[in-house]
Image (cartoon, rainbow, N blue to C red; front, side, top):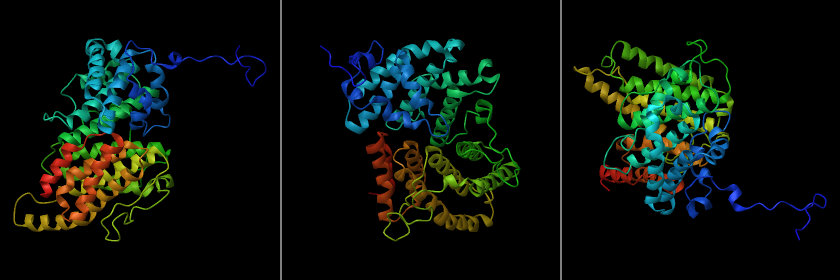
Length: 413
């Protein structure tokens, strides 16, 4: 006889395990079940939107969609591979299952415009980005499937561009744009996805000389992300070799970055620590500042703004390319880099390490370390930078062994 519930004399319903399982034909690996699959990677995606679509909506959709469930299981299994020694074949199996459904969808615009399929594509793109960091093939996350083509079709079809996207699709497009920023930096190429066309976004909607118009904090994060995309286009877009329009574009972006920092709301001030702190450097000025922020968009907005500033300092088109003034200009640039750029690398590392609940921040830290490691010659500082990569793999399951080996070779360790 069932025991009465606390609410009157009615028996409490018996809830069976199968009521809560993913409704797919594939059995869940026990380890993935125990680790609560979606909690392993969904925080990677809800970083610049006010509603957490990926964390709230996507797990429920995966209950009834095998393609989405397979994509989630593939990505979570790959993360567990690097965090807990999980078998790589499990992720490969779910990955192939997902591709069997995704590849035929390339020729069907109606299927491509399905939000669930778009989410599955984004998850697989992240998995491919991870695999590109351990593969000998440097294909930037596009060598295993046609997922980039799926996103391209989804964001250029007449249905998707007739009006600005909203809801989950808008959040997914912002995620796709952030993935394009990573790819552009990884492959040293312009950004292939337009945030203005795809997301209907204009990052400066106030007086360009005075600053940005007032907006919610998450909009300021989106402004920083879009600004970073413009910086990458300026650096890798070719232009006219650093003069004329290229120089004017660079100067405009330098001013835009300064206006972002001048006008950003007080919510972007760290709750603990400060940008000028010495962090864990034991007073030598070479440590990582501790910078704990309130919400995801405060973390990521600050990280992207710092990354953009760092890239602008390094890429200075005012430096002569030939002639007797080049040597002196290069010397002055090196002095400037010694202070400003190393400072920004340390700040990015501090942001990533201080905000463990926002994994994408430390991935930006890792990118900064790998790009500018050659500028750090102090052994103690090199060891701290190396530990950033190591902690990223330990905490978040992002493979960094290849990058760590490159740093050792570079530093002669």
